[in-house]
Amino acid sequence: MNKPLRRVALAMMVMVVLLMGNATYIQVIQADELREDSRNKRTQFEEFARERGQIIAGGQSLARSVPNEDNRYKWLRTYPNGPTYAPVTGFYSFYYGSNGIERAEDKILTGKDDSLAFDRLSDMITGKESRGGSVELTINTAMQEVAYKELTSKGFTGSVVALDPRSGEILTMVNAPSYDPGLLASTDNNEVAKQWDNLSGADGNPMANRAVSEIYPPGSTFKLITTAAALQNGYKPDSKVETAARIPLPGTASATLPNYGSNTCRGDTLTAAVAYSCNTAFAKIAGELGPDKMRETAAAFGFGDDLQIPMSVAKSDLGAMADQAALYQSGIGQRDVRVTPMQNAMMTAAIANGGKLMKPQLVKNTRSPDMSELDTFQPEEMKQSVSPEVASMLREMMIQSEKYTKGSGKISNVSIASKTGTAQHGDVGDKPHGWYVAFAPAENPTIAVAVIVENGGDEGAEATGGSVAAPIGREVIRAGLQGGG
Image 1 (cartoon, one colour):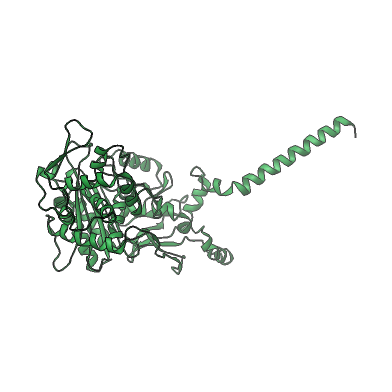
Image 2: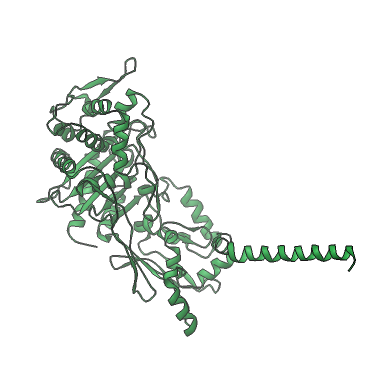
């Protein structure tokens, strides 16, 4: 073979090797990525040809697949009572993908998870059509439905999150306004696009998962963090604190920080400051403790953590606290402090659980197509936020706070530990967000709840956490203690 032929043969061999390498890379290494790419319609048609598993809670089906008349899509996703459970189920759409549990547990629901390999093999041998597995949630349906009704019947915008402080199980996760995921499950492309545009542009942003993705100023509920930091650094429940109606903001020419209504605090101890929510007391305490101790305490309650429940939770943060004025304002939950409703529920749950913070979890177990159990949720401790002794002191202070909290719905013969918050913000004039965080029964807590009502609810600028958020929180607690769901 002469030299030119050898070069041609060598070049051909190199090209064949490269071609084989490229094919191997695409078919083996990139296979999963390409299969799961949202633009891969072949995979989507394959998924819609298989019966997707259910999402269930409390014996109810929250999402299921039913036979579809369209031959291209053999199964259609439906959501009974969809708006109530949208924050947990999310949606599953041929055209817009998925979110919520529909996305987080997609491999179980489609039957592709490794734990379902035997089921797939059995179906292949017997010739049966493959089906997806099911996901059972920790949601208490009675509490979920009460929370949704309480928010929507009043026309409020906001969110409710409730946890079992002992295990971290998420009992309630509600948003208002909400949406019906079934509107995005249609196989009519034009209809789904219309619904998507309507929902995306709707007032109140109903598709936003406020419980885990929106961050808000926490107002006076953050005083529990400031109190925890104080108790861990020398303060006692009967320690004397500032009682002035207003105090100067350090480093400013004439700005002052007032108590609510510019009233002098009705007590001069730390316990009284919590009970009556004295701004001046907590501003002074934060200024004395300094930013490092404040950040350390907040981090112990979960601030700044990467958290999957299994959906992602936005990080809560204290902001820069660059000077004493910012530190004073941060100590009362204003300035740049931002939290999710989930974070406020976690803080409350940790206090209820003797200072032990459990990881929030939405999935109770996963099940095979025949509903036999595959995997079961195991409680996971995240950290010890405060000592049991400090948690006990905080609980007693919160019991006193509940006694002085106004608002309807107080529960007879049930001791509740709570804290309200009225959070100023710059979005809608001077209409504050109303907060309520609580746990019950105070002596042996099984429920911890956080409620936010945005922009004063139906009371506008006159709203407080006690007047608009506390009644909702109490009704959710009542539903949980009655044993439903």
